[in-house]
Image 1 (spheres, helix red, strand yellow):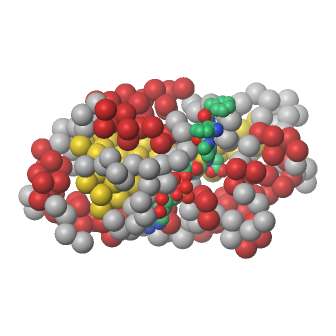
Image 2 (cartoon, rainbow, N blue to C red):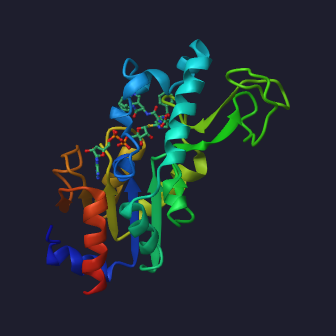
Image 3 (cartoon, helix red, strand yellow):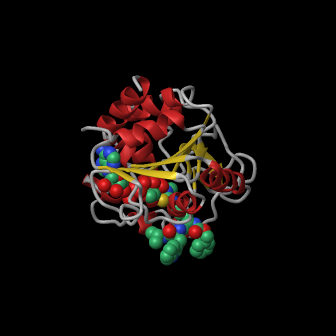
Length: 245
Ligand code: BV8
């Protein structure tokens, strides 16, 4: 795909680039995107019915096993070119902020650091009662396992629907969206809030906003540039274009 010359120029001149990624960035690694994650065993459940505190209280075993299945899936895949390009971009610009809705940790495995994880990370487990991250617990065959400190139920360290996002993460994400000169929204359906408001914050603050997605989203009509394609194809192309600019 040809990258518009005007975008290459903007990218070459950008002092602060902010990026928001969604499940589409991990799709080419083989991680089902969030809304079609219900393949196989989980075909009969909607994510919004599993990724909530209510679902966990109602059926902790089912929710724990859904995350165990997803953790196992994520453990078997590798970062794809989209993750690697975003990691390379970190040193390409004076300031670069990577904000992700993904919980798979693939950005960090590709070499990105200081990743803002808006929705937590599936590879971390925390005590539901205390909120502290727990790295090991006795294998008592309990499903979900119990916190070795207080006996409370353990849960994945992710943000469920109707749960607030980590304060520092959302503050930093909004600040970056409002101060960047170029905002890339990559592989997200732009429907889950407050993450979905970030590209609109960037638009309002006067940044150049670029969307990379094979499908249209609620952002498409307002983005300055829409690169219709897979992140693993478009991002390497974008970086190559700006490196020769
Ligand atoms: C909160 C972690 C305060 C868990 C997730 C009504 C209106 C507006 C908002 C609300 C509302 N009712 C409730 C809300 C708030 C709610 C919300 O936004 N609901 C939506 C569904 C309407 N938000 C919340 O509850 C948030 N908390 O607001 O707290 C509060 C307090 C009390 C009561 C209410 C509010 C918490 C939201 C966080 C939820 N946790 N994940 C887990 O993963 O199990 S969200 C989940 O969706 C994932 O994190 C995922 O990342 C995220 C967004 O999805 P996407 O990443 O965009 O993925 P998706 O599959 O949707 O799309 C993939 C895209 O990729 C597609 O566009 C596709 O075309 C594209 N694609 C595919 N292949 C490729 C590609 N792109 C590029 N390359 C490819 N190869």
